[in-house]
Length: 249
Image (cartoon, rainbow, N blue to C red; front, side, top):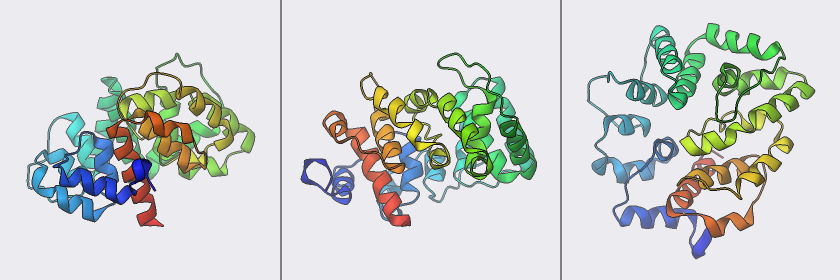
């Protein structure tokens, strides 16, 4: 049962019945895995990029803005490898952190050469210093293709890499990027519990606590006390993620 005596499906159905609309791209990506939610939102979602992110039909012309091009790529729009490389470069040059990470992942998914580049970088086993709140290209390589690369690396190196990556959890929760979602199980889960627990005591923007909760559940940690602090957006993110995971099981 979800908090407040409702199941996760009942929580989402109640939100839909009350005219709910998505507020974040994170919700869109989770809803893409839930056809029954997507169907209820189709008539009330007009933004082309959010429609593409949710897997809805969209007859708008391909966008020009970087954020929208990256969003369409995440939603499955068939950009070429050159387009993906261009988006990654633009986002890096503009220091558009979330777009950079998502574009790199789309690029690595489309390009064997980009995945190989990440593999070489992660095999070097060198960790540069990173100022708090910054993102290093090596981190982007982890987020771009880590689930394909990390399982083949030495366990001690993965442990060190996890410790180095862990501070970026706060930045991910701030951006609601869901950057760690595909790769978190390939990191050393035991090294993440402490950093996650410390984040619980800090201030976090709406949705961040929900993202932290689903990360913890994804690697087998439970934070029962967190349920008392979740805001509506956080609870919705948790409900959608749980439903999406159960749908795939």
